[in-house]
Image (tube, one colour):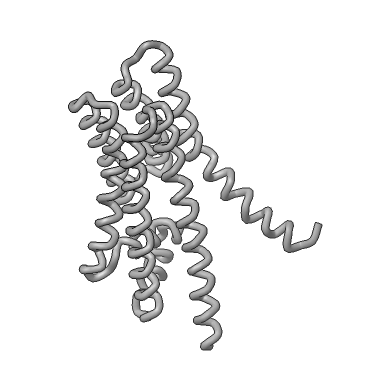
Length: 218
């Protein structure tokens, strides 16, 4: 086994360990809970609402561990709460499934609309995930805004991510009225993470290309 392979595995394994709890609480447990609750005779809407509590549990555990609530975590909590309340209020299984698509689509629209303001949303999400959250890391990220290529890259990513979320939301909303509820539970839990994985991989590749281009000018 050569050094490059070992180095690549050392980078991949921590990422896999980091994503496993996310996949468990956002895909595995919600899907299994819905199936078990449905088999136990719980009606569709309450089963969907209860199975949606697993992501809340993961997020709350993370917040308790970090002892810090940032804008991103607050936004996710609000979105989940709105989804559960509206699902129970309308008591319509298809609406309960479509509402998550609506939230995704609105987020995609917000990403693109943020181009009208000083800094697009991807700048803030990039700072949230690309830094360690320390004052030094945040300051270094903020300082990158002075470079035209960095500003252009953040705007480009906002368009790409926004358009992808809108397209994914439209596809899931359409499938809701074609596929059965049990199948859509799986699709709703799996498809967003497939799209997100593709976007993250593409963003890293794009970032490396931009860094190489900048280094070539030095």
